Length: 236
Image 1 (cartoon, helix red, strand yellow):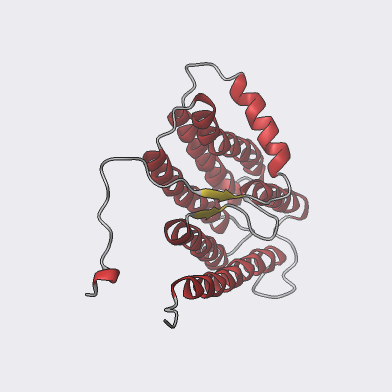
Image 2 (tube, rainbow, N blue to C red; image 1 turned 90 degrees about the vertical axis):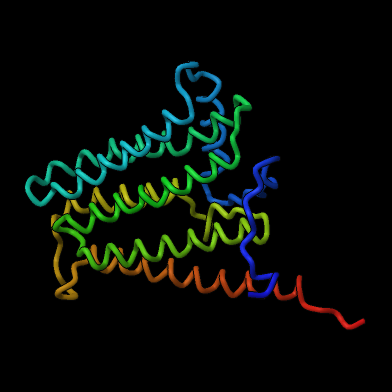
């Protein structure tokens, strides 16, 4: 294996290089003001790790709300509480650590993004077990989300940039879209199957999956071109 292809060994000493967090979603500025306000008033017994666990618990509640809706449609109400809990825990854990200046960059990065994968699995897995969205369609959306996540993590490694939003949307905007989709489920029921055997909800989630996969391909090509220009040998 060529030397430049060898995996880098983890360094035990010293902090990792700081990442340039790129966040251009529509609600970013307003959300940051709210999070700073909450951080300043958070009791000392609330820690970033507890907030991370609180967010995961919220995702479990979302999963149950969707998965049980085939037996009782009213369980969809649980998803609203779950989404709020998941937003609060996911948005506040890193914000509180930075506010209190107790960041652990390597640990925080590893835990945060590992949990993100589990959370999206719970949300889309629960949706796929509901009577509203086919499991295969929900899992295709999961694939698209994870592909885009892989791109973000690779970019953080090779460019030192962590892209947190695409098409002016980020995790918070995505939660609002999913909440709106859930309200439509409660209002329309399983909906008409104009594209049998796929429902309107299947078409919506499938279109979202296609957009995520297309974004992954586009961003991969853009980043590859950027790296090629950065590392292309120059004539002496």
